[in-house]
Length: 275
Image (tube, rainbow, N blue to C red; front, side):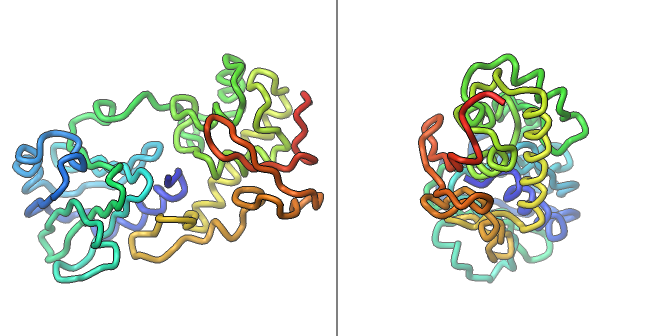
């Protein structure tokens, strides 16, 4: 599933072709793609509204319109892109929603597995679960991470995946952050020392910033709005590198399951003991 760097890259790629454009029509062919309101109300309500901004909250794409928010979640296989009306794209094989724009272009949502959704809402809170702080915001700090972590005994990797704990981090960037901080993914969150919390705060920001700079990781379905892949996957330290040598010590990278997710770490650099 696309994480913060991938969603941020999509948002940045959509701003230029969308901001200032007015919606002229809506088409869909899958009821579950249109989360809310019902498709008839959705089409009537969005027609004539103009895109004012395109932003991100956690893994959600948030488009501010004149009177509503258009919220999109890509889930596992979603792709969002703007193309001319007559363009035929490879991703159109899984096209389930599109908006006509006033300049002869369309905003298209393709989703092979149909887990993603679009929603038209007055409030983001109405269509999202509780979300934690944004890891790249000024409101997130080592003190915030320390205070939130000390409340939990669950494995730190599991906690990083919890969007109510920290918004936008997923499997890839959790593994990468923990590796750079030399923290075992199964360490109880409340066992982390102050120094480890400070290191982890820094590495979370480091890997997310690097992921954005490389325009996301194209391992499976994720592509930028122009259809090209990101490059973050070319710089992984542990993720998807099972049995390959650690870039620091040369030990084989191990893979275990934490919170039902495949988890990659170096057993030499990331010891399980406290400290």
